[in-house]
Length: 311
Image 1 (cartoon, rainbow, N blue to C red):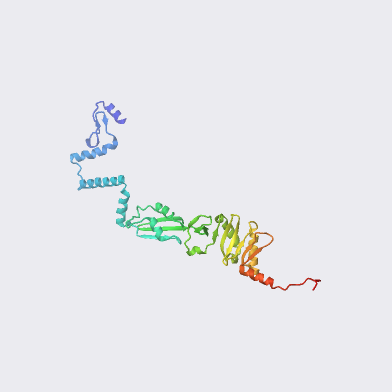
Image 2 (cartoon, rainbow, N blue to C red):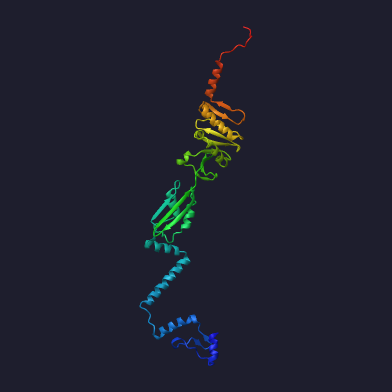
């Protein structure tokens, strides 16, 4: 609008004067302000007032070729590989890896999930994607991957906490307290975990083990915890004795069992089972040898005559 008003004020339609006598107006067309400086530079080059620096043509050609290569790599999906290769060869190649927090997770498995090669650059390395891959490992609950420039990766792992060994048929699995399967049982440190069997066992075992934990001497002798009909528990001891706990009154039954074992050595006797399912009494099943010995002892007892009997 200002240019239009100036022309109207002049009334001649002549070109407006530009810097150093150059005109930025051609008839009814006025050159925008943001184009005037480039036009002025081009005009000076044409008149010989401005001399291009040495090798400017070579530099411009190199810039053009480089930008074309970058653009072509971007379109072809090779830009990341190009950046990785260049930065790795300029001192940013990953050559130190520190893994912490892993007990059950092998460092080899962690390195495999990092997906490194000999020329992986720390600059282009996707730490978040690597973290997600590591968290797919069975024992890993959470992971953190940190880049430490110029060439180090630090991996921190939080592992799942094993609670018990779950037997399903012939399959043994290590599970968490929630019942979630962590990994197949492979021995080692997990051999000390309690063995639980039966439908509903993973869900109800935490409560049972918490109650039995009040009697550590008793718990130390238990080999397995068997859930029967998802209603009650059988305790299988290391010496082969089975204790059948009741469906109701489980706490009292456990307390009575611990007392009888402590006072009378119940679980050290030659018996097969202790049935505590009947509330007002306890049934004990003797082993075959113990039963034979008992029968023989009963037969050897002298017969007592009743008073008043005829001779």
